[in-house]
Image (cartoon, rainbow, N blue to C red; front, side):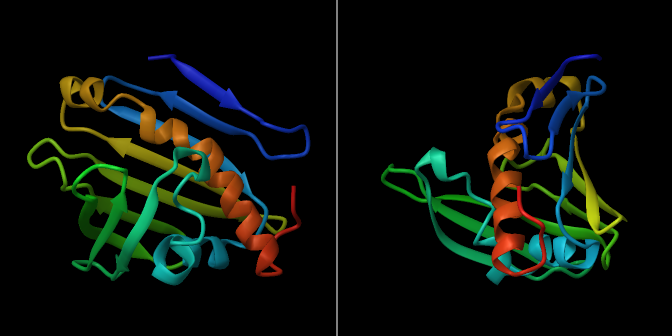
Length: 172
């Protein structure tokens, strides 16, 4: 597959790419302005994740964020999306290698859920983040679309802003 979307909202910001690499996999790539150990913590600690994960433009409110980032540990994020009931995203961590790799299941859809794997590679004080969404079938990926991956353009901008606020990023 060669479907590829690139976003660079402002000339100074790092580029985010979203690419459907096969019938079952979408890959999002972004360089983040900060060291790998801090970027890894931003993905694996609830107090940091809640500060950047939800795209502000989507109008959702994060009601709760629970993260137990260890192999076999779970996560659960609940959102108010304006409906009668909150929407929850949850799963289990299957690989946790501090500062270099996180992998988790996405169980909210039942069978056919995707597995997300994120790798962190530090170069010159920046971190190359590669996020892979792997689905069990082409049909499952087609049903999911790339909406969540597309939202990562804004989400990763918010991560850069968080690192600046923590004094760890160089800023856009």
